[in-house]
Image (cartoon, rainbow, N blue to C red; front, side):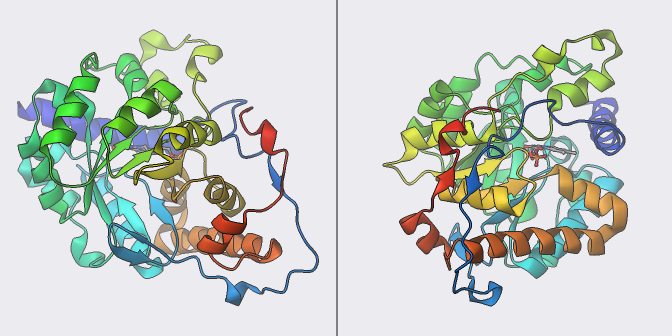
Length: 354
Ligand SMILES: Cc1cc2nc3c(=O)[nH]c(=O)nc-3n(C[C@H](O)[C@H](O)[C@H](O)COP(=O)(O)O)c2cc1C
């Protein structure tokens, strides 16, 4: 690949981050789908925050909370700084993290450093990241392994983002053979793979196909949070009149999780709820309604931009406090207890509406 193209990939990522920080890049009038559901609270819970244990395991590693900071960045000096801060703080909280698309470093190994955070987070689950578009262009097991080795990762997330590819101003990748590429990769690659959306949601058809491939996990990245069609439309002046209906088209996170669950129920495929999961109480709703883990991206980026490590620590502390307080208020002391006993959810049957 020409160095011009490598530079383009790095600066594209920096530009996307700038847009996320300076513009409204979230869905309009589409929530993550959990907003209409409320837990019936109790005044008589006998649990305090200190009684709550949210620990679980992920890829054979114990984590203190079922939380993942989704992959966002790398490939530039700025990206490296974000990755390092995320790694250090995730390690302190003992939660998982992903790095952003490593395409830039596969094309130009000098950029590998911008993704390498293992020394800052020696024990947490760490996810490598590539797009299905790269596999359609010719990547295979070799590049998948390279991405994992580059960061000493535990799994590879493959993101699928047809809407973004379509709208972005650079050359559009054609995602017409995604199915066969995913099938081939998962068949041939012996490391855990996470099939990952980037904020548009998972239909029942997609859920059925993904589950048949038997990946380690499906990360739904539903509608309701960061909206990549919007981000790319800010960058592409030729498409600045795209309609709100088009840009806000997607399947919300609650519904996406439900779609995936209807196929994974009898399998070991894990479900990651993401896409606008920016409050601890919504995280608990997702966990009670079948998600194994909860992930988020944009609020982490914003916290770091605002106040670096300390602000990210504050965000995570509040989030975790909210999760623990929710469990205490509904009288569930750990995740097993939460899943086995469930809880009365007011408005549960509205969960599919935005
Ligand atoms: C600035 C930014 C960069 C992102 N870059 C990537 C990426 O390189 N690879 C990827 O799989 N997802 C990427 N995402 C998508 C997130 O991982 C996540 O799936 C999505 O933003 C939904 O989560 P959220 O609503 O909490 O932001 C990015 C998101 C943001 C905000």
